[in-house]
Length: 94
Image (cartoon, rainbow, N blue to C red; front, side, top):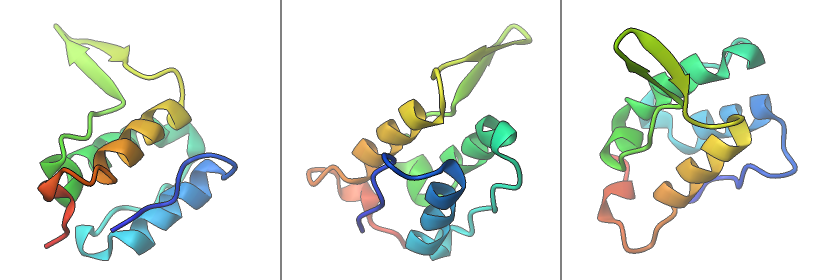
């Protein structure tokens, strides 16, 4: 499965394309662009994304939240690279 590269596309359009490209993952709809990190954390923990070790956009250490990516595009590029790796057999949706 290939996905849309997150360049020259809005966040909401890219998020919607993931829902279309990975229907059996039952991804949630991104309701608000300012909540992309929370949405991304749900995506990272779901189905094929989890099997491919997609990182959450943020981490929590000792009760403190730390943003691990400067913006949604940086995180989305990592998602794209992990799920489009031809050497990775985990990127098949079941």
